[in-house]
Amino acid sequence: MKHFTSRNGSVLIVSADPALSEGIRWALERVGMDSTLATDPVEAVQRLAWDAPAAIVVDLRFQEMEADQIVRRAIVCRETHGVPIIALGDHPEDADSLLDSGCAAALPRDSAPQSLAEIISQLVHARLG
Image 1 (cartoon, rainbow, N blue to C red):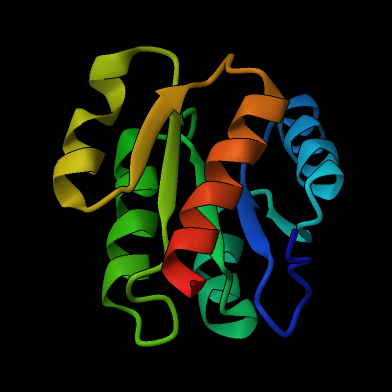
Image 2: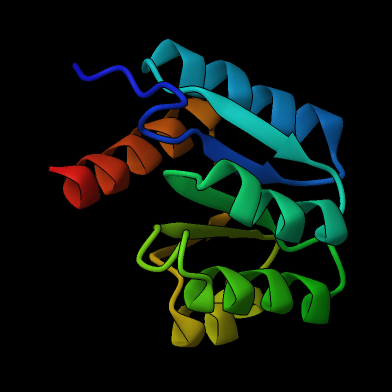
């Protein structure tokens, strides 16, 4: 298993929910991946350029427009173009517009962290080879 460090980029978790973000962080560590956390959309957009993440997890509990702006910025930003974006929502229809915008996956917010980590790991491996 390849260990993803800052050289390969870490997973940017965008969520204001500490329980969600820490659960995902813990699960990512178990599969050998590093993560960074942004607790608001402004910080998330800044980290897109600073951290050049290997993947981005966006909690859709932010206002829909804010989550959509994060996704759109990640898609057009040179440093993050092509980076897998995973949207987490309470309802499947919440993520429909983001899937249309270019998200790699839209998953239920209450997905098991271990399952999320495996999906993220697979998406990153597929991208980096």
